[in-house]
Length: 413
Image (cartoon, rainbow, N blue to C red; front, side, top):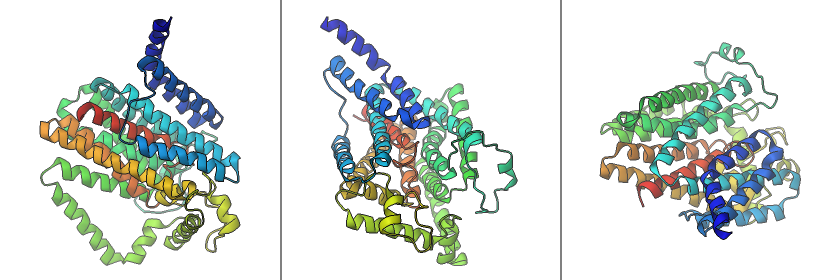
C-alpha cells in the first residue's frame, strides 16, 4: 500500500509544474481563485514528502524566503484592512509556490530548455493580452510614438491592464530571450529560433508602445550588459551609451531631464514622485519592523500622510520597488527581498562564468539573460513597483528566480 501511494505521488510530482502553473495563471485572471491556488500549491509540498521524503529541494535563497514568509505573518497581524491585505499575501505565496514548483521539476537540461521556450510563449501571450486589454496611455510622453497607433488597438477586456504593469512584465522576460539569441544562435533549432525571434520582436514592439520610460531604462541597462558580455568590443558600446547620457544631461540639464523621465499626468513630474517617495519613507520610519500591511499604501497615506501636490488616495503604491517592499513588510521584509535578489545576481554570474570557462554558448546566454533580467528589474524598480504584490503578474518575478536557481543546479553544481 505504501509503495502504491509513493507511485501515485511520483506521478503527481512529474506533472506538478503544469498543474501549479495552470491554477496560478487562472488566479491572475480571477482573484477569487487565489486561495485555491495557494491550497493546490501547498498540497504538492505534501506530495513531494511522500514521493521523495522531503518537502522541497534546497536552494541558497531558502533562509531569505523563510524570513519573508515570517514577515507575511507579521503583515497579517499589522494590517488594519485585512480584505485588502489578504489578496496581496495570497499573491506573494503563489509566487513563492511557483518558485519551488520550478525548482523541484526543472532538474535536467531538456526540462530547462522546455521552460525557456515556455517563457518565450508566455511573452507572446502577454503581447496578445496587450493587443486587446491594455489601457493605453493618452498623454504624449515622447514624440516618436504616434498617437494614431493606439486607436487601432481595441480594449476588449473589461478588466484592463495598465501599460506600466505590462512593461514591467515584458522587460524582465526580454533580456533572457534576447541573450539566448545573441549567444547561442548556432545551438538553437529552427523552431527555437523562430519562436524566440517572434517573441523578441513582439515584446519589444509592445514595450515601446507602453511608453514606460522606467522599463525602457531597465531594458537599455540590460542591453548594455548583454553587449558587454557578448562581444569583446562591448565596452565600446557601453562607453558610447554613457557618453550619450552625459551629453543629454549637459544639453538638456539634469532637472529638465529628470522631468522628462518622470513626467506623468497622474502624479506630475519629479516633484510629484518625490512627494510619493517621501510618504513611503515616513511610513517606513513609523512602522520599521512590521510595515503597514501589504497593499495599504493608498489608504494609510490618505489618512496619516496626505499629499499636497497630488490628490490624496489616488496613488496605489510608492512608485519605487524597494520602498514599496519596505512599506508593505517592514525593513526585515526588504532585507530578505534584497538578499534573494543579490543571490540571483551572484548565481546568474556563476552560470555565465561556468559557460565561459567551458566555452558553452548556451550556458553563457542563460547566465547573461538572467543577469540582464535582474538588472532590468532593479533599474525599473527605481521608478515603479509593478512587479511586487499589488499587481497580478507579480509571480513572474518568482518564476524567473526559480528558473535561475534551477539553471544553477543543472549547469554549475
